[in-house]
Amino acid sequence: QVQLVESGGGLVQAGGSLRLSCAASGFGFRLNVMGWYRQAPGKQRELVGIITSGGTTNYAESVKGRFAISRDNAKNTVHLQMNGLKPEDTAVYYCAADQCCLPPRSRGPGTQVTVSS
Image 1: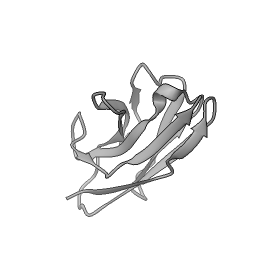
Image 2: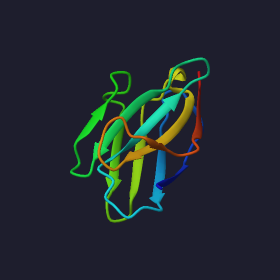
Image 3: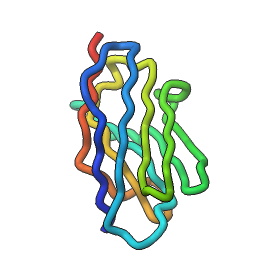
């Protein structure tokens, strides 16, 4: 079973940046898909973006041009660089991964990101 642990959340002012990281462990296969979900209070969970093992990325329209996902296959880590943060980006962010497919089925416990106006 894949275990995912996020780090790097916190409080930032609008227009600022944060970098989230996630370490994956407890599996013996390649994680083809890694990425990030987020969920704000009272809202549905949103898939923020994903990256495949080959480096192909895809992002939600709401974060395109501001967020960037990267991964290190050798270290089984994935990162989310968030720039130009807005108050509406406030949410709990969850690392996600899957052996094969979308949407990624495994999630971490989450890390809070709060953007103040």
